[in-house]
Length: 245
Figure 1 (cartoon, rainbow, N blue to C red):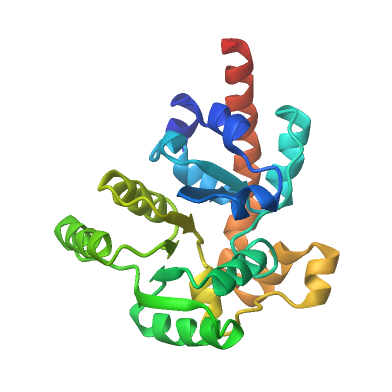
Figure 2: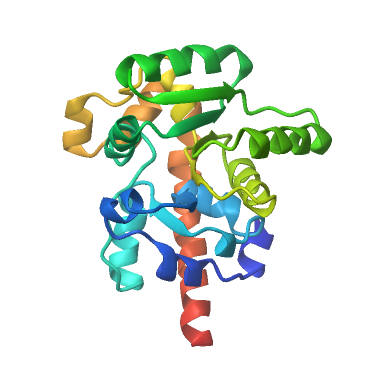
């Protein structure tokens, strides 16, 4: 844990410059890669991924949304990669445009059912391929990336968890792919059961975090200890950033 505080990086600068203010920015993007940040992924990404390679960053949850307003002087929307947020207008747009979409993520036993559920919800979505998010080694990963370059989907949705999904998109972009890429965390895993993971009343009350703990008890550490630790680390990074300016 100590190295998270000692190793300061430029994540605050990237957040200030690249956090998306509203969904229209995402819908107007023609190429580039997008990552989300929430308290848990912030800790994962902080010393492992340089977000300079990402074109846009979204706030997954209300915590970063509020911190951005207070400390970064930037008013933003909660733009989470699921159907409670910006994936709803994005998938509608992709269905209308017939854009070629590729999905990668979740476990081998889940991905097929997840894609079926998404296709039922968006029957006009042009899904040209999918696979699970597990690779036995870097060689298999790079062979897959070569296949994706050849297939050349217009859009790719990546749900491998942080920092694996961000690393995947960076490698794909570095290999010459010029489409639109979005990291989506647990979206594909959740879609195995239900594409509308959160009930309407949960969304209205803004208690998605509490519902996830109820539905996935293993996440209790994430929403208690990790989120509390994030506040300490974020404040440290923000103070270092402010002093450096």
